[in-house]
Image: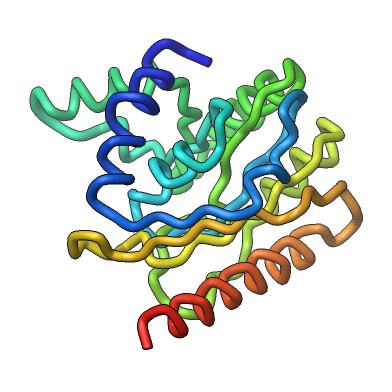
Length: 205
């Protein structure tokens, strides 16, 4: 685990998320304690990352869109430095140059082959609706090439801003690679999210 990732986990993410929000995490024991794996989750807000960080006690190397590295001014430079310090993996989805995708896949494989976790949001963008966007196939390709399990994660409520709002994370059992895994993963995460939504409705009624 990189120094900056651990520092963020202990001094920023845990204190901030646990103090400001009411966070409920289930199924964290489904994440293997060692070995490579892909954390695949639905994506509701930028707070998904600190939520996963406090729920999973291993470093996750997130695939992040290239635009996050290109903010202007002093803040942009500091944020870019931070993204590199916590070892994220850039991907330029808007580029017609295939080299960006190849570089991203190569970095992901390097982390997975050396027993690390890679975090991917298969929807490809944030989505606060009830229905998820169709999943992209990067997770399936990496799982097949690297022979690593995929750990499905459902997230609900992470877009909320009110003090002590409820946020939920549910970690499912690992999935091994199979033909057509993308649809299986989409259905699995969809079920996790639906269960969290029902739980949230019961809690708030």
